[in-house]
Length: 509
Image (cartoon, rainbow, N blue to C red; front, side, top):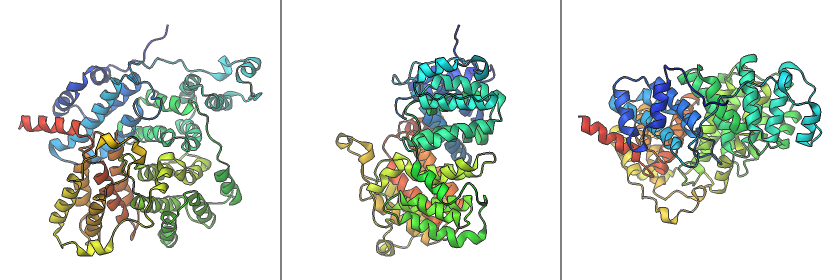
């Protein structure tokens, strides 16, 4: 008899709290628990487990467990940079989003069932049954672990997410976990061309577990991303990228992993070339040539980061969720540093960044150059650091409200002209050499207002923080200005959770 997933008694009551608390009460009750001393790590673990167990996968990518889990790393890091009760804003936002998705009729009610591990060598179909069900004539004769891998790849090709889930329950117990993850990413990376979130979901889940909440619940938390990755449509062939790898012999030549100081002379110009393109399909060509000429994998990642920042600054998007240029490159640079991820996957990670629909769409709404206006910046009054931070924040807080009656497609929204005022103020700030951490702090406070973007604003903020610190001069400032640009676009769309938590804080004073 099938039964729903249950968790250890040390975490089960808190999971049920997130699942069962009415939406109207979740802000108040979460703040109460955090103030009472429930550790942030425990709260986020419970939130991830709740949204995994009680949310079906969404038909697209909004709703379900995807975005609440993808935001865990970012909200944790922002929480760590904040002080007082304000530090709870990011955590409450994440928990409230998980609770919202649990109660969403699009993805619930739902229960994730316990799945028995499937040993493909002991319980697989016969070849005849396999052929009858498949119709392609492809049958694997592999044995043992290789048979499990082949069966998983076949399940993904056929969209058999249930079977893939069963197989992975066995593989987690019988293969090195990094090898399991590498296999999953071999499907997720090319599916990025169909939807950026096929790549994002498993990669962010892996990062959340390994850098925030731990791996005690790995087998449960990875189930959503396994099922999501394995569903139809099947992975898209990427002949252009694969031909670049073959043409330049990138699987056969020695490519350094770590970047060196000497690579700066190559990384900067390559980044500039990337953000100067008009056709994003040019980007992997530039990267493959640089790798063939001796650039390291991490050096190529840094150049891609510079390119992503420049392209974001050229972008005229007004969609507050169009932040994948930064969030995706940041996640890819993290993956490049992982030991055990295969050379093939690391090359594909670099050479497929441009393929995500939410990355690629920005090339159709671009200025010819990054939007900073030197003449407009020169005309701005000189301000002290604190006064300029206030002016920058004011320019974000006073962005014109969106007339939602005129919006029929978020993906086609264009930024209002006032966003350029924010960009120019941020550019003035960095040109004056003012403190980067003070600007990061102020932008983090602004990001905490967001309840609209399903964690996109939080992920973008964390991405620009990390990319600023991981990018060399004279390019790192571009990430900070990008952060201000994104904040101006996303601010004020929906601030329900922030306002509810703020009211509770004032009531407690």
